[in-house]
Length: 144
Image: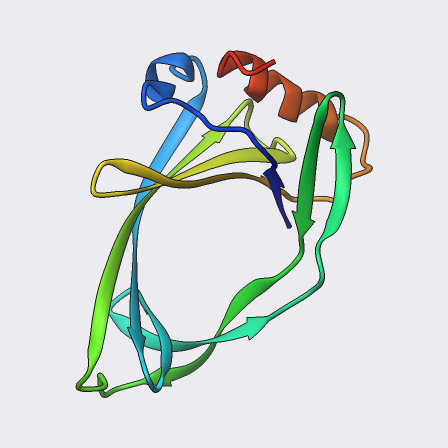
C-alpha cells in the first residue's frame, strides 16, 4: 500500500539528505499502447491489469495524505509488442530506515527529474511505528 502526501515537494538534493539510509536503485520499463500497458520484467513482457481501490484520507501530524491500495498485477505474458507504443523508463530509488522496516520511501525519477515520491508500507497504516518512520523520513528531508 502507498501513501502520497498532499502539498509536499521534495528537493532534488534528496540523495544528500538521505545518505544515512540504505538505498536500492532499479529501472522500471513500461510500454504504453492502445492494446494496454505492458511491463518489461526479467527479459519478459507482461500486460498489466489495474486493481483500483478508492483511496482513504489519513492524517500524520500536520500532514494529510492519500492511502492508496490500488496496484497493477502482471496479468499475462506477451510475446509481441504492439506496433504503436511508447516506452517510459523510470529510475526507482528505495530508501529504508532499517532492514525489515515496515516503511520504505520511494522516489521515482525520469530524465533526472523527480516524477513521483511516496511511502510504501508492508503493513496496515495503523500498525505501531509506521507513522514514526514516515515522520523520520520527512524530518531527514527537512520537511518536518
